[in-house]
Length: 75
Figure 1 (cartoon, one colour):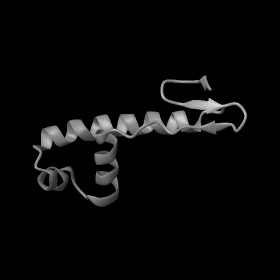
Figure 2 (cartoon, one colour):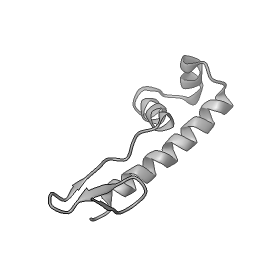
Figure 3 (cartoon, one colour):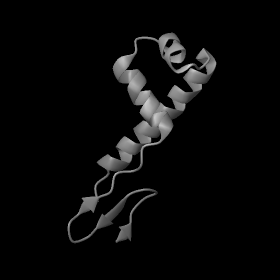
């Protein structure tokens, strides 16, 4: 297998991409994006302060966007 970027490997014979691993920040960001209307409610639900929830969501969004870019790269 050939390494093509940080977390994506491909098999030349099948042209198969491995999906980068989801981290907890991405999972929480996607949960927020799909299920919550406000950061305040998200923070309350998970027991975070609003400041901490914002930090998690910013990191999760950045990680998610980077993951999508990696998946969309041509092999």
